[in-house]
Amino acid sequence: MEQLKNKDEEYVKALKKQNDDVDDLIKAMRKQFIDMRNDYSDQLNIIENNFNTERQKVLNRNADEIKGLFSEQKAIEEEFMNLRSRKEDEYTREILRSSELKMQTIRPNKRSSLRRKCRSFRSAWKT
Image (cartoon, rainbow, N blue to C red; front, side):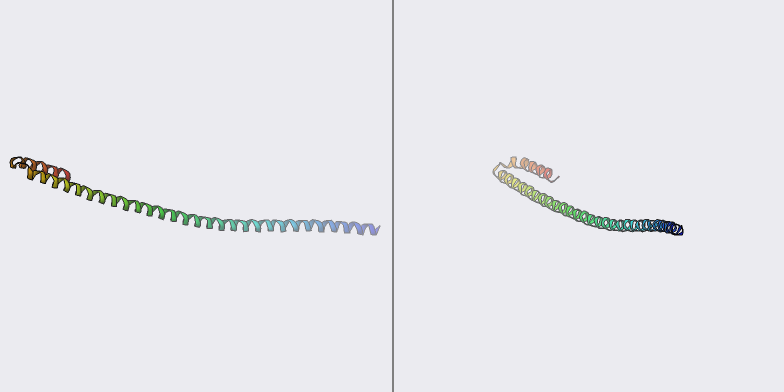
């Protein structure tokens, strides 16, 4: 009978030990879960920061490229406007030269009226 009582006590002790071991295992699993969650959170923050840094670099590079393209376009437009202005001046000189040559061949009394027309033409082109 005593042997049975000892076996019962051993069984109860084994159950308590098993219960304590399960509690310890659950505690260890919780700690491991929390540690892993914190590690993953830290890694995710690092990845997000790297992504945001790279994204900002790309945005800055694209903004610089766009500014460069606008500057290039502005330079081309200015060059075109200068060329157009030079051509207008050249054509105006040709027209005036041509009209002066015609005035030399026209009778003197008609010259004065043509000169007035040329002057009004010149003033109209300058404004």
